[in-house]
Length: 90
Image (cartoon, rainbow, N blue to C red):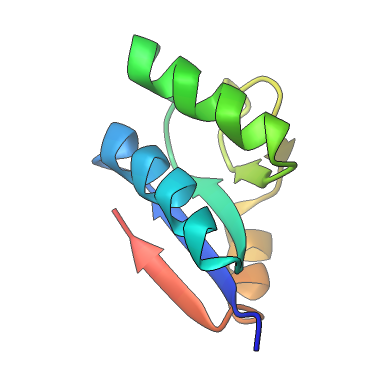
């Protein structure tokens, strides 16, 4: 049965995005939550974001600085996370 997985990126953003892309091999539904700060601008992050966009993965953030991601308040994101089978924090 397909699982709903959330990858929460806060401190180790690059590792979180890499993991999110890798988890797609399990054929589960993967969404990424970027919390509390702007996503670091690095070559690896750009590559992972490009891959996630190609795979129609959803990216959410509570920081208005993150362009191209769906913005939600921290409280809204906490409620959203309750609907996931697995939450992986980074």
